[in-house]
Every structure is written in C-alpha cells, then in structure tokens.
Length: 418
Image 1 (cartoon, one colour):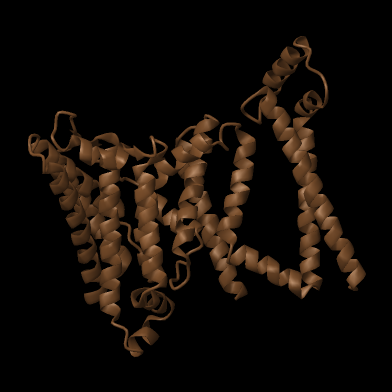
Image 2 (cartoon, rainbow, N blue to C red; image 1 turned 90 degrees about the horizontal axis):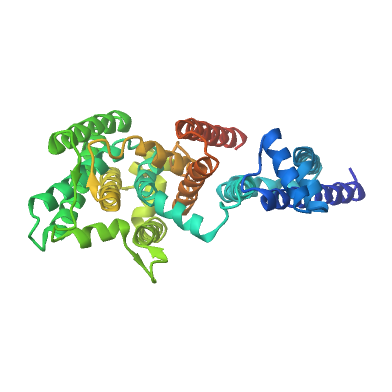
C-alpha cells in the first residue's frame, strides 16, 4: 500500500472517530437534559417526550432524545469503522503498529480508565462530578491499600489471599482494645499499634513458610486466611464490637476512617492511600529492594545465582503485604466505628482484581504499582455506576469476575505475542 492510501485510511479513521464521538456526546447531553439516566424503556421515554412537548420544548435536543437508541447505534458503527481503519493501517504501517502496541500494552490501564469514565458518564449524569469521584476514592481507599500489599506478592509471581482475614482480625483487635480501655487516653494509639503488629506478624508468618520452607503461596495464604478468620470469630465471639463516642480514644481512632482536612474536602483515608502508594513507588523504583523484587519475579533462579538474598526479599514482601492489610483494617473499622466478624470477606478479590486490571502480570516481574490504584479506581467506578443505575448489588461480584477474567486473557494474549 502506497503512502497516499495510508493517508486516506488515516484521515478516514479520524473522521469516523470524531463524528462518532461527537454524535455520542450530543445524544448523551440531550438525554441528560430530560433524565439522569441514559437508557430508559419505551414507556418512560414516551412520557418524558410528552411532558417536554406540553412544556413547549422543541428543537434538536428533543429530536436526539426521541431517537437516542438509533443515533447511539450509528455512533457505535462510526467508532467501529474507525477501529477497522486502524486495524487496516496497522497491517501496512510499522509506525502505526508500534504506537498501537505501546498504547495497548504499556498504557493499557490508562486507556481502560478513560474508556470506562466516558461510558459511565453517559449512563448517569451524576457520575462525572467532583463529589461522586471523591466518594469513589473514599470507598476504594481500603482495598486500594490492600491491593498495594498484594502487588508485592504478585510481583514475585506469588499471591496473598489472606489479606481480607488479616484485615478483619487487625480491625477487631483495635476495636477490642478500645472497648476494654474506654477511659484510657492512650487506647487509640495502643489499638493502632496492635493492629499494625498483627499485620506485620501475619505477613512474617506467610513469608517464613513461603520463603524459608518453600511452600506454595496459594496454600500458605489459604491456611492463614482460615486461621485469622477463625481468630476474628474467637475475639469477637461472633458479634460486632461497636465503638462509642464516650470512649477516650474514639475521636483519634475513628478520625483515620471518617476524618477530613481542608475544610472537609479531602478525606483522611484518601491521604493515607496516596501516601502508601508514594512510599511503595519509591521503594520499588528507587531502592535495591525494588530492583531485587523485579529480578526475582522475572527469574528467581537467575536472581539466586546472581547473589540476591531471595528468602529475605520474599519474607519482606509478604511482611509488607500483611502490614498494609493491618492499615486497611484500621481504616475499615474506623470508618464504620465497628468491627464485625465478617469484615473483609471477599476483599482479597477486590485487591487481586485491582492488581490484575492495573496491568501487573500474574507471572511476576512485570507491573507498575501506580497502575494498581488505577485498577482499584476502575473497580470502584464499576460498583458506583451499578449503584447509581439501581442494578442489584448481587451483580457486582459477577461483573468483577468477568473483568478479572478479561484482564487475565489480555495478559495471556500479550505473552503469546511477545
């Protein structure tokens, strides 16, 4: 194909993409003018149109609203045409193929985030607002912190499915100490310290059996998941431990989950999440420990032969995972001012989903920790839009499973191409 044909394909791709996006944006804007939700059934749409006509509403917006489904279908066809042109261009242009591969591999989580944001903004008018995004960040803070810890395990080619149970036991211990020392002003600090120590201890135990004893990470963390869930039930006696405002340490402890700064505009859980990811980024990208993590995940045998203390690095990685589970336990308990025996159930699924969607390879040795928070944000946005559009919460788990499977398939496909 000559350069002129390539230019025609490129221009056609741009025209289809621009027209498709413009048409979709116009339809969405028109629909939002009449109702918060984009997709309405026929009866509801006819009722809105009748109300608009009675109110004297005429013009382009009403036409777009009346024919929203057909016009959205046309917009999708235009965008599909743009993708077809891009696929054709990639077959004949090395430069186009290289750029597309870079975008869909190195920047895949960012691309998914942008697409998800655009689609969800179409589904509900309140989705793309500052208040809603602040709410999403507050909601994802605990399992984003969990995901940062799980990232260390997955980067080594392992896994940590015990984090949800460690979170529950850490939070329960914190609440237990506060409830038993209601008049002690140091109770909050003792509760926080105990929760963190439990997280560190759990991580050390996982690291010892995985690194020193050579056991499989899945089996070890499955066992500790059961152990710490059982300890939570023993500590709480199967009932919630509620915190009272009359307790001396109530304000300091619950402030970590409910507090905010900058006149209430910036919640403390979001600050904690940001600090943890900043520290994780520094640790993994600016220290020898981080370089050793990537080396072990890429090739453990070669790392061992090169003189890296593989056992030490693995133990420290799982200890960090446990510590961050303890931090998440504090945040969750502080937010609801209560510790329940079922806290943290399935949170390991959210954490693993965030890591996988963030582009980290399950084989180990590949990934960016900052993309993990993007994965957590995507999961949070999924939950949020399902709630806004009144979809049953039961479907959220189904959606998460489908998203995880899709992310793993993309990872496997990229491996085959390499």
